[in-house]
Image (tube, rainbow, N blue to C red; front, side, top):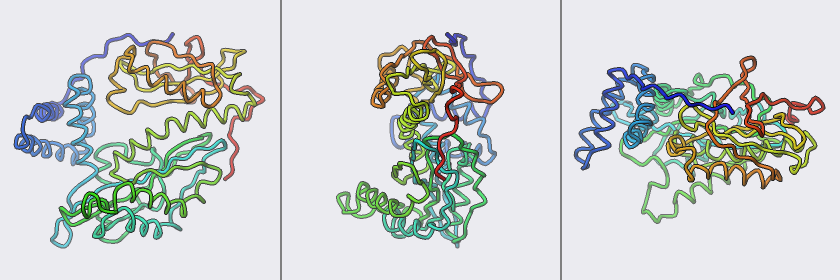
Length: 403
């Protein structure tokens, strides 16, 4: 078994990171709203300094330190840094405006292959109109990117998120596009499930509502659920042509980070379902001829689960799927904790729904190994050896492509 037993050395924090950690710990210990306000003011100054200097390293190292040392302070810091990067104040024609980076996720899965392109240009005006009608407040202005993006094309740091917030916010105020933010999409060969995001900014005069469900009384007709239902119906009329051969699900448009996390959460079972379905279809193997092996992977805590697929006749890994860990609770939980076992049990239940009944859950923490040559992740065989997945020669490696 490939396990990791080395103790993790303490993280050495820079002076700026030490101050950020101290402020997070002070805010976590605060006993009143007035004290909160005092610490939040200092917190904002320090965060703004680091974001302006593009010191994402200091923020990430502080988060890593607090995750291990003080989870309450970690929660405070992650909330603060996400808030300060996905929202900002802009000044336009002498007036202050609140700007929020938002995304509207679409998760898709298929037994064939996901399409490569998600150009929104033909639909952009219609989407903006539907957002105005069903999601954003009446006085809000919006700007949308002209392509649906995947995770790899989205901001990879907190300071980059803030840059997107500022630039798209200014685009909403000046009514001009900001498509220079779009990076080329990496090749998605072989992907069976993924999320795509409609991304933009909402801008309102400072202090005014951002979303339609904020307006009126709490029991008004434009509740969050009703707004979401209307948005789903609108998307069903606009977007299916971009997802030929796929099953799709539209998620709630909301602030950038919470929407991204929800898409991450929703894609996990769908990716597993798509992998199990494709493997049975491509290999011509019924589910009762496939064995699945589940292991937890990470350095000092669980970072992801890897599922290796093999046949009942051989221990060779023929395919694999990754189930990422998304929350602080999942990341720091002891891997022998009975509560943590709920994740492998959820994976096993999903596999059994797909007809794969021979499922093994191996104890311990495995290294998340990758192939040195091609970068592909390794997956466990039934004996706990991490292997490069290799499909038999008679099986076409690539899913069918409808696009």
